[in-house]
Image (cartoon, rainbow, N blue to C red):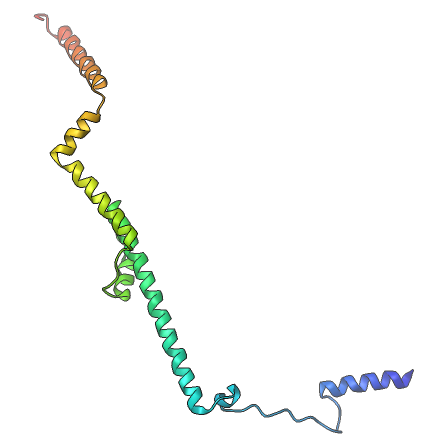
Amino acid sequence: MAFLMKSMLSNQVKNLGLSGGGEEKSEEAAPADPAAAAGMTREEYEEYQKQVIEEKIERDAAYAQKKAGRAVLRVHLREKYRLPKSELDETQIQLGGDDVDLPDDLQKMVAEDQEEEEDKDTLLGQLQNIQNMDVDAIKEKVQATFTDIKQSAEQKCSVM
């Protein structure tokens, strides 16, 4: 039984590398060159690094473009609803470049909104709004106001 315990403990100690003397396993020296670690030649590794950097630049540019597009959308909404401007949006638009525009769907919606507003601003649009008004309600309000003025005038003036 003691033999079994001794062999188990000595195996565990050897695995930890704490055995005193005896045979020591020398770890494989890690290659100092990253190309060798990746299993490539130095030229292949440099080409790979260039590709990685180019892809990162492309991703960053696409990300900046998307952020600028969102900023354009926010700026448009702020203008539409007369909200205060944001400096952050302006800088994101500048970082995204000059070719940042509203998405096509949003451009169609903006054009429709502008046409509706222009129609409302014209004389014809105002006339259509008058047609949509409730004439009976307006007539009742005018009559009520007229009677109020008439009564107050009768109280103040004895000639009437």
